[in-house]
Image (cartoon, rainbow, N blue to C red; front, side, top):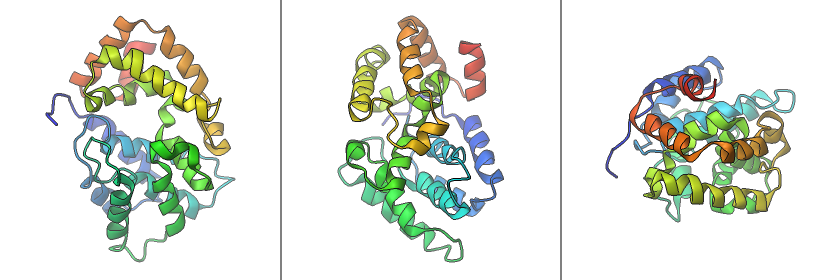
Amino acid sequence: MNKDFVTKNRQIEILKNTILSSGLIDEDILNEASKLYYDNPYHNFLHVLRVTSYVLLLNKNDFSPLEIRSLMIAGLFHDAGHTGTAMELDEFISLDYFRKTMDKYPDFLIDDSICRHGIIGTVFKNRAKNKNKYSKIMADLDIGDIGSGIADFIYYSSLFSLEEYVKPEYFYTEVEKGYFKYLMSIDKFVMISSEAREVLPNSLKTIREFYNIPLDKKLSMFETLKNEDITLDEFREKYFN
């Protein structure tokens, strides 16, 4: 894939600091995980840091520190090795990277079952089939931007059009429409886990607001996201304040 976009290095650093400040993830493991990601427009290290950071929003009264840490590890490895093109065995590639990396850190305590279920849960095509609690949570956090709000959703999702090889006009009108319909066909509230829905409650509001933004403004946002190393806060300030 030709690199025709600017990597969001500054937002990556913000999310890394958020994750490390939790005290639950070892910096060496974070750095090891970063090496497993290509600089894709969407399925990249920024994406997995964002998913991992959403784990920290979960209600701490409902989860033990071990559960939170294990879900964070699932977040860090859930797209490991992704080339930017969906492959039939992506989840098994990610699981293999997870296992090989964590075997280097035998004293780093995790629940292996939670990690494995969490990684498998993020396989988008199997979203409707998830039964395991941790699979459902990670499936939701993987699309957490839609529940976080309209600025987050557009900031993190727009460059997916480059992986789909479609023009942004088509992406914002047809691809996203199909995406919303698919999610709501599984659950009318979009999120399938009550735990994620509690902390990322804005899915339906995001969809409504998305349709209310004129296409020319969305295209302006796309050009900014494609061409600038802009942080989420800067993007929100520029377009939503």
